[in-house]
Length: 552
Image (cartoon, rainbow, N blue to C red; front, side, top):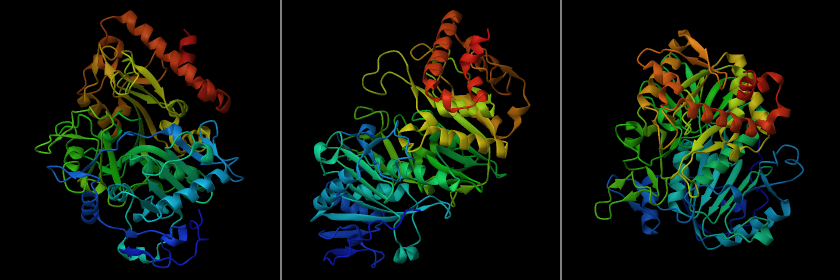
């Protein structure tokens, strides 16, 4: 466990402080001695008032607090750095993480403290992790009131009685007005996200995008939990009435949040979880949903949660006169977001915990249109696809993309947040699947009948019907075929689902084009997995789609 952050600063200081807090462990313990004021653990009404008074945000017609994030409308992974010291040297996956020296971080930290001088800061004492055995006490100082509301929404809020004795294990300072010096701090630009995982400090500067806070804390948990025998996961999760929990892996835009918010099941969480010997638990106390083209018809729970007081909307367009949100408008960014407390979802779990999962679902929005709508995976195939972390981006979602779909492979469905080698997480997943006899499924929420531009998006009713059959156990009983290209098991018929959609080649008018496209995607998987081949056993290597193609 991380030691209480930065105890060495003990000097007396004079600053106006208000709110419930531990008076014996205040901002001075982190070196923040020359502040104008600190507002501790304010709730939504007070933070609304500060945000509006400071001109940070506006209130829309539904009562949501709405802010624009300026230049940065998403994370900036190239600006994220981890301190390379004697502890992290052998633990961090340096092929996937950028490093700075302890000296460079010390200079950055000192400059953060100096920059904060004279500021009014907002502080939140929160828990990262619903399981008290594995959660981390986290203190967040923010320059902006709306950022304070955001992180208060996204993490788990302690009881007021706990605040008097709260001592942080992890401390984060978020100063959007700070500008890093690449030469002095060893970073790439004026924007910076820096993590000292040994001392439990996160520094974020230069960006108004609030998601940087959430993902940095998630990265810290990803670093700490494997040593405790807990698999950290970028996933959503829910649980049925019988206690049968399910995990949903998927990159942005695959439907992870949408599909886990099932009114027939209890939502555990939408983005980040741990899997321990006792079951699964949510890291968060809120949801951070993409809301581009959000509709009441397709996503009623998320739509309702985003249209009320207490929700925080990022970069959502509004009618200037009525302030009615336009969720279909992506002119600011396709990455429009809604942050809201978990309790805004009617069927959300109050504890954030559930028992061992019965099903594990990997979601891929296949814009090439060749993956079946659902397939059953063996444990070895599950590890293969977990390490692959496949989806596909399409034109219009990001700058620079052309007309053709582009594959995206993000190992473990979250490579930007993996401090350790992917094999650490992959082996833990495989062992947990085997130990608890978990059924594993690959679900295509992307295209059918052709690639993006020719085919159509997989009907959500089909996805929901297939997922429902997987989760209630009935899909185990149907007949399966072996996919010619990928080798996994695909159902041949499912009640309520038209049979042809289960076999994607039957949905294409041009069968030869399907074959070429499928073989091309197999090649993409093959090329991507080369980096893992020496780190997995023969069974996982045999689960690769190229093995099936070579056997023909």
